[in-house]
Image (cartoon, rainbow, N blue to C red; front, top):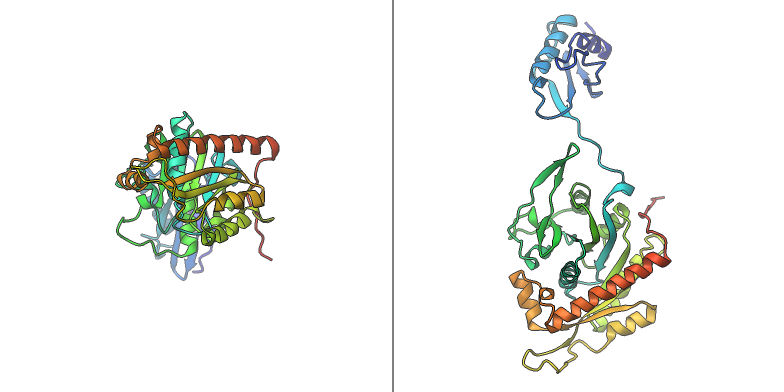
Length: 369
């Protein structure tokens, strides 16, 4: 006997879903993945939810219907799988609908303190009463969980409108997610670019970020496919470029500026931050030692016509606070705390200016010819 898909479907019309009395074919419960290989038949049933009380008996009823109405020798038992309906992810323009401003914090090279600046900037804004989120997008070197003192946290899931969403970890008034929560601390993340990109998309699309005034993304150093993935996924309000004053770092900072301001990406540059601008010993707070050169980032900002949002000194407490999970911005009266507070004020002004003068950023659409 030759087996056709329609024969199977006609047999399945004799199976009725106990909850409604409707046959499972008319109810759209038979997936369109039917495979017939000789005498073997396999397909999936689609259930509304994982805890459907009738689904197991429905599978047995479907097996029996095929054996009864088509052929008793058909190999069908154990070949009916179950899929569950999950509301579709929102389309890209609907992502992060409760977020007012998405800020990329980036650098041309590693080692310039980008994550330290991003974390303390987020803390400084939260202390001013803003609702702040932070995504640690540095897949291969996630450091933000440690800096925020939540390295051992484990994000939970919450079901909203039928979708399971990741709940960001909260500390110091900041909602935060990082790939560091999902890998072992002592293990290297050895992923191909596509895997890393998909992981970041999930942390954006499948997380319950809620209402935020500022959503910071701590970009990986350099320019890579991770950067392209992010600008293709969400409309970034503007970018903040972090660099040290030394010429080697500035050369790479130019590449970061070029990436965001280029015609294909076209994300506005909100301004530059000069980190490690000078060294100030704790016992000599009035002294400044320009270890990496003086005002290099300031000159770069002037060259491009961008704002210099802030200059952050090297102070031992920055390193100590980061290691202890208590960002220096929490101490608003310290030298570094005041520097980050001022940086936060300048960023707010830069974002307001950008939103007054420029249209909303569009998601980048890169077409491969």
